[in-house]
Amino acid sequence: MKKGPVYSSEKRFYPWVAVATVLHLALFALSLFLQLLETRTQSNPSIVSITLVSLPVPENVPVSPTPSGASAVQAVEKRDQHAESMKSMPKKTVPPKIIVQEKKLPEPKNADQFVKKTVTPSLAKERPLKPSEPVKIVTEKLPSPKSTEREQLSSALERIRQVVGKKGEPQQATSGSPVTKAIAELEQKMKSQGSSAITGSTAERGAVSGGLSGKGKEIGGWDVSLAYKAKIASIIQQNWELANPMLKISSGMKVAVRINILSDGSINQIQFVKKSMSEYLNNSVKKALERSSPLPPLPKEESFRGVWVAFVFTPEGIEK
Amino acid sequence: MLDSKLGILALISDAGAVVLFVLSVLLFFSIMSWAIIAFKFGYIRKSLKESNAFLDYFFEVYNAEKAFAKSEEYRNGSIPKIFRSCYIEYKALDGKVDIRHARARIALAIKREANAENKRVASLVPFLATVGNTAPFIGLFGTVWGIMTSFHAIGSMQSASLPAVAPGISEALIATAAGLAAAIPAVMGYNYLTQKIALIEHDIDLFSVEFVELFFNEQEVQQG
Image (cartoon, rainbow over all chains, first blue to last red; front, side):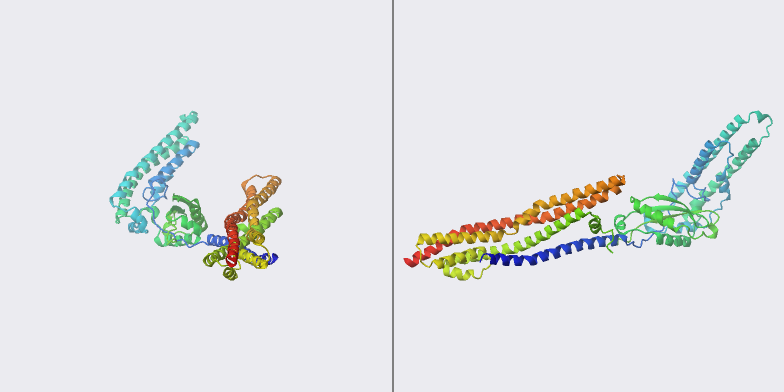
């Protein structure tokens, strides 16, 4: 009598054990599935579009040698390099390379191209080109590095002279030493190139202002043909990989880089103009550029020197 | 397909024998807890529902014969069961003994049936308490054992770098997680079920007296 119901209730309990086992298995399978789903979504890279723009010439970053006075910034950098080398190696002669290069550099050709290069409307919105504004910047800033460069060089020459003078005192009587001859030559060069540099800078002023107003000539470092730019952009885009979760996080982030392309197409230098907050995004851009090197050789009109090309990497568009 | 990237599988496959044993014990505990909770939840819910329905009818008619006939419909309710045993005992006496003796025998039959019903209702529930109390400790044991072995391995590797230390601890901690996963539903289920069981026991105690009174009131009415 007593055992009957207990037995029957136990009997009814066993199906529940089976149900609980199945539930546990289902729960375990679900957690595995979710993990699998997560890893799959993470590993699938999406297609990322690169927004190609021409950045305005940054003020504190070195630019390629250009007719616009090799850009004030580069001149400053090279001047610093020379000054350092002068300090460390005072006995060596100072080759005034910057000025010589500037003399060789051709005048900008296509003024209209520069105006066309503001491809991305977003950036154009951010920094609208007012005809008067950029002219002011260039005209004010370009000449100053030139003058300081010349001052620097002349001071370096002075130092060399002092050092040589100290060491070569017994030989001064002869006055025909090769060192003094070299210094004299350098001085002459300095004088001649200094005047040309000044004229060059004034010429550049006209060129830049004209370029910006759409009538003059283009800034030299940026006159890579648009077709070539598009070509290399597509190559870089193909090599750019970015994981999906990153895209969600990095919305609105931008990585602006400038690359120095040599005549054979190899990327000589990568500079980050603007880094994003995400180091992963920055790295992905760097890797994409490294993977893309060497790029197609430069067009003939550009092949005699390296060019700087700027890119803005934006993961936008994927979210939408 | 299910490679080492899948954390749970990797943690389980890389775990030591003791941790695996602990995990399997906890899995058994968890399965049994879930089964008990589901089974008891249904059982107690049905019992309370039928008891309430029977009591409504009982107070409505207040007649032993009719109540007994109705109680046949409520086979899972605790109170209808007790009433049936009480009625059977009353019928077995059939006026052979005096009222005082008959009252004592019926009260005894009710007590016996109430005890049996309490046992039935409360069966398996203490297991939930056991799981709720011991599963975290069992899990902790697995973790301590896992950390012990992983530290031993680190000692033999002679490296205390994070990549050397972290995987072992991570594998060991899965035992604690499993212990808590088993214990939490068990404790919740135990609290719910004990509350409902207490309610049933209270009802049994209350209405047992009521039943006895009904039978002897009827007898007195019949005799009077």
